[in-house]
Structure formats: C-alpha cells, structure tokens
Length: 148
Image (cartoon, rainbow, N blue to C red):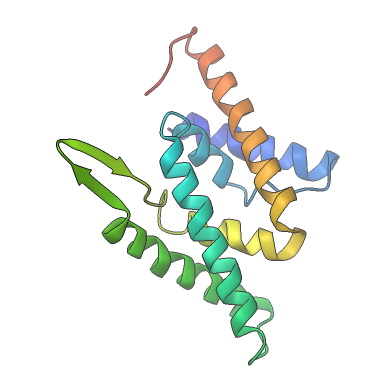
C-alpha cells in the first residue's frame, strides 16, 4: 500500500508539472489504484465526490466560501456523504454483496475540491489515467503479480 501512495505522489507531481492537471489530490491516485479491482467502489467514490461538488456549488450561492473555509467544508461534506454511502450503498441480496461505498474518508472531499478548481472531466480523467499507470507500475514492481 505504501508503494501505491508513494507512486501516486510521484505520478501526481509529474502530471501537475507537465500537464498542469491535478489527479484529484496528491494521494488520491494511489488509493484509487489500490481499488482498481473494485470498480463499484471507484464509482461510489466519484458519485460521492460529485454530490459534494454540487453541495459546495449550492452553498456558495448563499455564503462566501474561499481558502481554508472551502477546503474544510469540502472535506467535511465529503466525509459526511462518504459515511452515508457506507451506510446505504451496500446492498446484500441472496448472499451477493454489491458495495458502492466511497474509498476512504477524505478522498471524496479531495476529489471534489479539485473538481471545483479545474473542472469535473479533467479531474476524473487525470485521476483514472494516473491510477491505471500506478497500478501498472505496481504490477511491474511485484514481478507481474496482480495485487488484490
């Protein structure tokens, strides 16, 4: 796991410096790379981040949200919506479990923060490309072993 986060930091820095795009935060691509084999959890994380992004847009119509206030509010909202996803987006039916819960507690808030700063499509695209690259590097480093 620590290798994924470390590679995520390096890949995020490279993307930020060369493309001018952030991959949803410095640690986000590493965590997404660890969950590539759980696509519903990645989808749940993106949905929670989008809900957080839209909530921030809604609140910004009524109050000034800049600087530290914005980052704290976006992470708190991401935390709250992520918790709700853990409570309500796990469906068990006849022994089959479908989990669309968010990854981590602050990951959706970090993604939503970058969605606000650089746009939804660039953030999600960069995040997915970075996560796939990190996963490939992890497989190469582990000698071709698929890490689950």
